[in-house]
Length: 146
Image 1 (cartoon, rainbow, N blue to C red):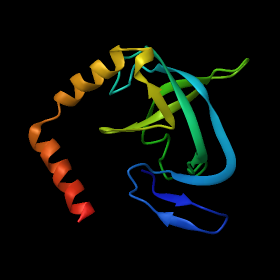
Image 2: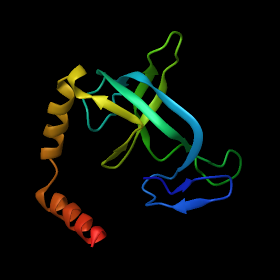
Image 3: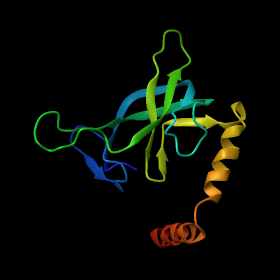
Image 4: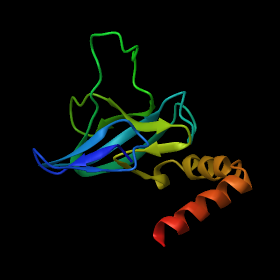
């Protein structure tokens, strides 16, 4: 969902660019169980709720921004809807669950059984999507696969 994926030090492949970051493949596997707390700004799940999940990845998100200059870019253009904490001693929470408009991207595979309110709220919010928007998304998906 980022603007590109970097497979080695010199090779990048363009992606769909919903998020203004790139993904970098690395050799280190990141795996573990996490506890996720949703932020008050979370668009898809109830705010300030806890759910468990798992992270398993060979990549990382890289975001480069201007730190000095007159570009006017003061913050990232997305929100981070989760606070995720690895379930190991002394782990620090990190912000995760990247959201922009109606898209939520995350490395965390949520386990809905750990908090049944999550799938209920997700279905409730999805039902609010106008039928013509859902139909347009399905049409776009079919066109992309053709």
